[in-house]
Amino acid sequence: MKFGGTSMGSADRMRIAAQICADARKQFSVAIVVSAMSKVTDLLLSTLRAAEEGDHEGVKENIRIIEKRHNETCRELLPESRQESVLASIHALIEEFERLSSGILMLAERPPRSVDEALAIGERLSATLMSACLDSSGIPSIAVNARDVVVTDGIFGNASPLMDHTRERAARILLPKLNSGTLPVITGFNGATLDGKPTTLGRGGSDFSASILASALDAKELWIWTDVDGIMSADPRLVPDAAVLDIVTYREAAELAYNGAKVLHPRTIAPLVEKGIPVWSKNSFNIPAPGTKIVPHAEGYGPRAVTSMANVALISIEPASPAIQGTMLMGRVLEALGRANTEVLAFTSSSYRQSFCFLIRKDEVDASLESLKAELSLELAHEYVHPIEVDDNVGLLAVVGEGMAGHPGLAGRVFTAISALQVNIIAIAQGSSELTISIVVRRDGLERAVKAVHAECKMGVAKS
Ligand code: ASP
Ligand code: MG
Image (tube, rainbow, N blue to C red; front, top):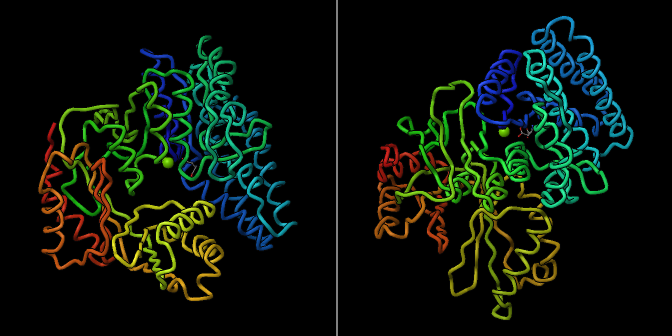
């Protein structure tokens, strides 16, 4: 099971998580993965930014806030006899963070490796508290730093697991504990390279940690505890009649996550595919709710959900000279984006002039442009390629559903519903799998378009 930041957010929440563990242990052997307490990773990160800027006072103040929050949680959570040793562990972790921050203050720069080491401290703090909570409630438990178990490549800030090594470590380190009835509380989000350099799996990466470990341990099921009832047909803040989906497929869940549904980290599904491990998305604030089951295959087809992303930008590139071969240009552009670690959310190309455009996240625009301009510097200087255009007054809407291919006329209905609102469609992309139709619209029409598509496809109505 994995508990997210809000499910670890206070002493009360940790107690509820411990109760969930106690119940699950009646049926299963359980290991859990925990996120940092809510908002802690953000606070750690802003502390490191303050350190880079030389803001000694800011660093000190943030560290004080972080330590206080964990100390208070500890005092509220544990019987007095157990507090002293846990407070000492918290203090030791805070000191570790202080040391890393001092390094950054001194260097006036944030080496990615130190950032990863420092950010993981949020999860190490919550795992320490959660493990002590379980232990004091009578469930033998041990906190495990994922750095010792999850082996990754060396892409700091966005590492990927090396599964064979991870499986070997999980068998060596976690299985004996499970077999002896001890519940391991493993830090989410972090790992380390084979030679021990600390890494993280990307923001929100604890879901991914959980699926990596579920796969490495051949888990029967993975339960992901969050603060919403499951995966929904749309964001309920935009669409009041959005409904929880009882079953979605792996591919649907991955597409939904990728296209902006916040309930699951986009990379969560991949490690589970080989073994077909089912995942439950459940609400620790509403335990009786059934949640969403994510499975390899399911019956029932058609559009299931609509997602949207507002913080995106459309970048257009157009050759200015017929001497430029469009395909080569696209290849180079994609390579430049890859080097900048940019994720391309949608890509379309159609015109005779070989122009093409693609959608990326707003916060990746600067790095992407820098990389593109370096790659195309000659062509831009000689005006073989028109100046790169960036339009950030756009939003992405994605309609997701397994087997939409079997619904002729669906795309037409979706487009009609959007244009009936006078919302301008700027670009469209549909993969050949027809699992997702991505539509780029003017930003100010995004919310209305989501509502209209949800109604048109009757997504709020349970189909299964
Ligand atoms: N604590 C990390 C973050 O906030 C990982 C996670 O919560 O999944 O990004
Ligand atoms: Mg999360």
